[in-house]
Image 1 (cartoon, rainbow, N blue to C red):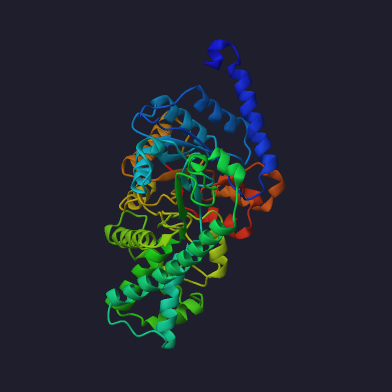
Image 2: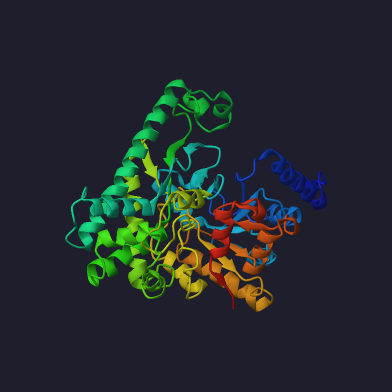
Length: 472
């Protein structure tokens, strides 16, 4: 309408959006996240792609700064032209756009009581956490959970005698489930206490004025005024947990090669002196992310358990909503966590999202997305990330770009929540480590957000490099 009325030109609109993006980079502190979501559907279910959709993407490519990340809410009616444009943008190495499954996310929001029209009007609030726009008070990542830590604590308890020796793998799994569930219960109780304290002491009059239903209800933003209120958490290291449980199943309970106490000794030694065992874990055991049904089934069991356990807790009168992404916490948790049964060394980053652990997508990107979509993402409104890393040499031709689009759309059609793609070679990343001054503008997708590679600490740099680089 503004274009037709002559109030603005496309060039001027593009300039204003670029200025907004530049200003955001002055306002947002390093390592944070802020997002723009384009595409999707309106309350009637019609596609809303328009000139502004393309301008937001073009401005992201032109400014080539950290903030904001730009995502596309994908659905079956998303224009082919938009997908082709997005794939060309990814191939340029900017790290954007990410893709969000519009139908899946809308359905997940409706499961939480969000109306049909409001379920179409959502966005990822920072990284990939979902909330209805202008109608909610939703806490995100409260807190992050270290998935493999629950498994290791049980193993250590068995080794030192404080936990009874399990008779079989199912009994061991039950101990790990209870350990993780106890962590969730404690966090939920803590979040509920803080929620109630904020209801008693808080007050956000400005937010209350611009959030739906606060004025109509006569209630503050922090006292139940918004239309939708809940707390979201996020579980980090699902792949480490699943692959670690597989290692315990195979080596301890099926092959009886080790006792749990002996496995704990191996972990405490950080696999030093156990090179053959480490190689066996990495190379012969079933691995999540390789389209191996046995490994994927185990991961799916844990993903379902995590979602059910989280949602069974109540915070502020609403279910405790789970997610599977990590921001920078895979690096933080990794630096605090010793070796784990999946073959991860002490101090190494945990898996960076809902996909395979770093370097384990040995069968290719198609197998990777097939594994991740063998379990339901619908309940993960707290946010879910699937990272792919492609060689910059693999996206040179129109056929390459068509293959990338097919991969992304396959993931979406199989019920994938979100997918994002880094297109950069490991050789470039290594050179950036050695000569950071030459790569100050090298952007990478970390885990739901983008950052300059040279701004990352060493743990996160190594984590990004360690991701499997898929070529043609």
